[in-house]
Image (cartoon, rainbow, N blue to C red):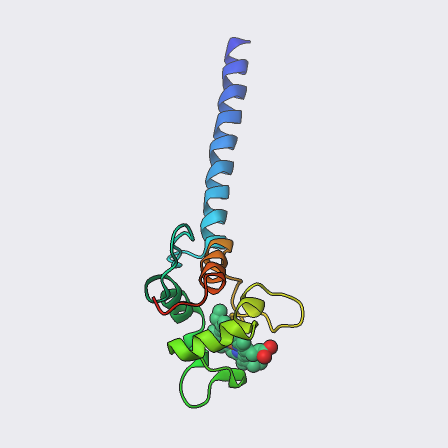
Length: 127
Ligand code: HEC
């Protein structure tokens, strides 16, 4: 009898251990392993926080002479223009009326979107 109880406690413990591992992995997947994310507390620097994100998620398709969708990025002036016309935030936040970006990839994490939003809301500084 005592053994049975021990075994059921062990079983529960093992199941819990495995399911917690499973959720850990799921978190990692949805945050995108290796994805750049620095929190949006304090001043958000364009060069140090915004550019690395855009580089990872956008510049591959939106720089050069023929940027996808004719939406040019990759310089401060171009990124600022896209921020000011509302398309930068609209596309990454998957707002209605905008093409969801990054195209063909999963949405950026809330943390990453918050970093970019803070940069926009603080006046799209070249800092
Ligand atoms: C794999 C290539 C690819 C990536 C990566 C990508 N885009 Fe796009 N983007 C496209 C294509 C293709 C279009 C044109 C078709 C469309 O609008 O869906 C487009 C269109 C756009 C447009 C114009 C849409 C409109 O409503 O006028 C904006 C703005 C844009 N992308 C922003 C971004 C941003 C910001 C990122 C990074 C978070 C990004 N894109 C990442 C391929 C890409």
